[in-house]
Image 1 (cartoon, rainbow, N blue to C red):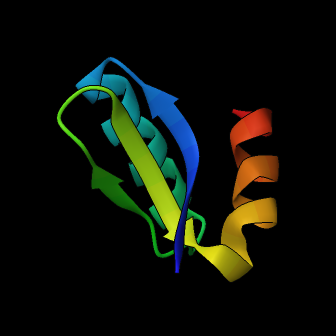
Image 2: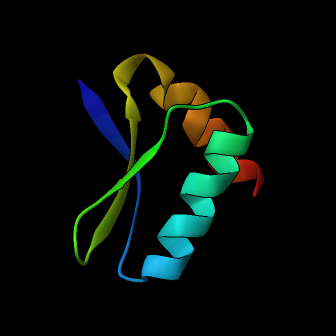
Length: 55
């Protein structure tokens, strides 16, 4: 199961967050066509949110 850890109306912002998470080793995907969701596997959601807060 995938969980949305970041939602935005701006595609470039969502792509930047997804890229940052991937660089940290998370399996992150971008979904949606506005709003855009950055999703990760459920087991990685808490850790991914901690990374996002540091950005």
